[in-house]
Image (cartoon, rainbow, N blue to C red; front, top):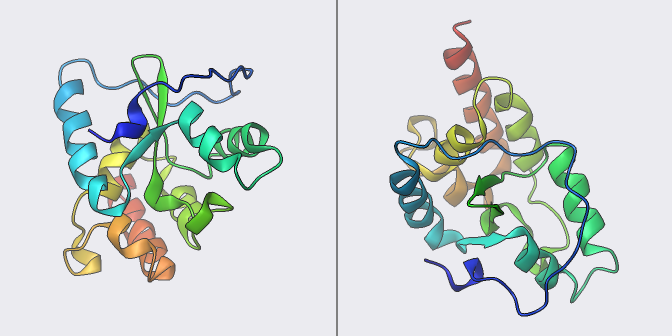
Length: 160
């Protein structure tokens, strides 16, 4: 697993977000986490919320507040794993200043039809609408294509 998953030496204290990501499915939680780690490894891996805030703090004056706003607004992908909030790094721009174009729009399409773990797996797995590439791999070069794939899959998942 990515080394960022280890707890930092300094713990950051923050209030819990209003919206908490869904917990991992109990029966398949280890398999789901392994699949996510494999799926997101080529695009930077995953980091805990605490570690991500520390990394963002190098270039942002309010990293905890910014990260909390993104989580509460459901503009970032995150999952809960053993009391930690984990976030895939593919969704952040270089330098962790912001989100990659298309990320928030893709999430808005899918949050009402998938739980947090299903969303994470959707981004980690290959997608037919993206020529078999994963949305995580595609986002850096074509956020619009990821948004369109999410829109299509929302219609399929919702049965519309």
